[in-house]
Length: 218
Length: 253
Image (cartoon, rainbow over all chains, first blue to last red; front, side, top):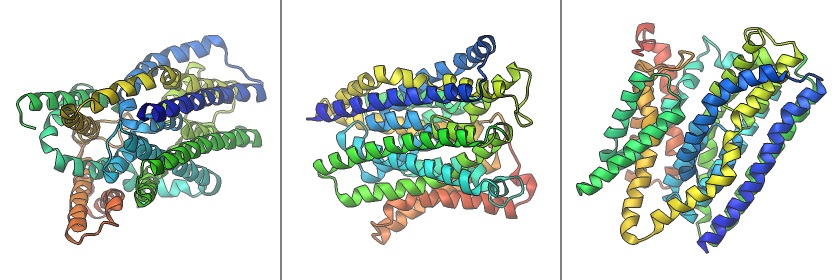
C-alpha cells in the first residue's frame, strides 16, 4: 500500500518535472525568436562555464540535502518553484511539526506536499499581484529609509528563530554541535552559500545523534 | 523599456499558470490521500492557513528582489525567473556574469536584445541542473531513507532522532549565519540585528507556546510560528526606529 502511493507520486512528479524542463527551455528560445537575437555560442559558453561550475556542483549537494526533507510531492514542487531554503523547506517542516507527523511517512508526505503547494501558490499570487498592481509603490515600502525595510532585511532570522525555538526546546542536546560547526565553517568561508552550509550542519547534527545514541544519552 | 511588452507578459502568465496548475494538482492528490489515511480535516485546513501566513512575508521580500532586478532587465523577466526556480543571489549572479561577458553592466537598463536573450539563456541553463537530476535520483534517495526509518520499532526511535537532527541541522545553518555569516551585498551581515531578531523570534515562539498550553488554546497553536516570525520582524522595525544607529548597524562580520 505504502509503496503504491509513493510510486504514483514519483510518476506524476517526473511527468511534471519534464514538463517544467520543457517550459523553462521554451522561455529563452521564444525570447530569442521574438527579438530575433540569439546569443553567440562563444559568449554563452564563457558565461555558462563559470555559472555551471558553481551552480551545477551546488545543485548536487542541494538535491541530496533537500530531497529527504521535502517529501516526494514537495520535492517536485519545490525544485520547480524555487526559493527552497528561505521558504519551501521551512514551510514544509513547520507544517509537519504542527501536524505532528514525520517526514518519510505517508502522513508526512501529504502534509508537507499540501503546505509546499499552498506556499507556492501564495508566492506566485503575491509576486504576480505585486508586479501587476503595486510595482510603482513597492520601492517605497522596501527601499532605504522606509520604516518597513528592516522587517524585510531581517525576515530570515525571524523565520528561522520562530521555526527553531520549538525544535530546540525539544532536542536541546542536539543543538550545540551543528551550530558550532556552522560558525567555524563560516569563520573560514564567510559567504558560503546556505545550501552548502546546510549540508555541513546536517552532517554534523546527524553525527552528533550517532555519538549520543552510542553513549546512551538520548 | 522594450522588454516589458505584451509578448513578455504572455510568457509570464503562461509560467504562472504552469506553476499554479502543478501546485493545485499535487494539493488535490495529497488532499484525497490524506482523507484515505483518515487525517483530520481540521488538521489539513490548519496546514493551509498557517502555510499561507508563513509564506506572506518571505514572498514580499522575494517581490522586493524582483523590483531590484527590474532596473536593468525590465520587470517581466525577473518576475518569470523568481516564479520558477529562481532566487535573488543566483539570478543576479547569472545576469551580471552574462552582461559583463558582453562588456555591459547591470547598473543601467539593458537595451540590446542580444544581451537580454543571453541573460535569459544563462539564467535558465545555469539553474536547471536539479530538474535534470530529480527524475533519476529522487525516488531512489527517498525509498532508501523511507526503508531505513520504517524498518523496525527499534530503528524507529533512532530514525526519529536522526530526522530531528536533520531538521536541527537545517535551522543551525541559519543560526550560524546570524552569528557569523556575511552576504555578498553586505545587507544581513552577522551583528546586533541578526542576533536580536533571532532571539526575539525564539522567545516569542516559546512564550506563545506556553500561552497555548496554559490556556489550552488549541486553535492558536498552528499559527504560533508565523506570529512569532511577525513579532521578530516587528522587533527589527522597532529597533531601527528607537535604538541609536551605532547599535543597530553594529556588525562583527
